[in-house]
Length: 368
Image (cartoon, rainbow, N blue to C red; front, side, top):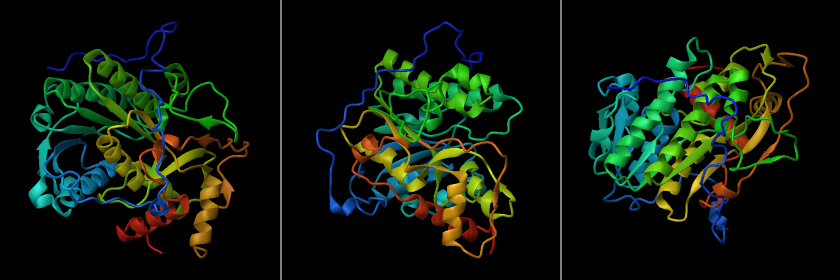
């Protein structure tokens, strides 16, 4: 039975968990191998051999890549989906190399207590990615807040029950950068930053609020129950799609190339889905990994994206003006130290945009 859920916005005056226990400790030396110059999926066929892990929300954009790379590394993967019999959600997972032998799908619901018990029991680790991501909502509590927060608690409760050694939680830069701090081109955002729930609520940024509350809840539960968790905090994730459906962040690129007359007046962080997926796995595998990991290859205004896409596809019709006449929001920097401590370098934004567009063409979301 799911306990009644209330909107988890602490009353004003209550101290928020803005700086939880995860430290910013970095390994004493960050690897500097020339082989990291080209950031691509590192495939070590034996690193997961004999190990069993669980991935929640496995049919999603990021999770599908996590499953793909885990299978390549030899892991046995238990993957939760809402309906294992729905080919629209599972066919792309079942077709992955190694899936026939190493992938086991199971049905789970974020809002059902104990729903993840069967998938989590006996696992060496858990990757909790399941959480809704969309902006146009009519009921923020039911559509975003409850699944994100209650779902996180339900998954962590299952992990506690079966003494899971390490849990990787997919959070977001949404839980990092939305606060009352000034951001300028000289500002460096890092893992010590936290979004402020009141700011999100005031601005009706419901997705941002859901990720902030979910991560705060995860750290609080982990601290109270002696669980080892790490969080991966990516910005807007783009790159190739494995799933057949259009996800929110890929739709942002599709909108630019699909006849839009204007581009949004936003500056955002961008990162390749393959880097995000591998960061999850490396954070699980490396004993020295700890705390939060902000993942942003570059903060760029939409006008810069349009310029890059024009250089990649000169004949493509793209929006030529901004959606409003307001000043462009400033860009800012995001520390890359924690990501580099995992032994990787980012795939460049230019490559990520090209991979996204080619994937959208391949899956017939756009043609030109």
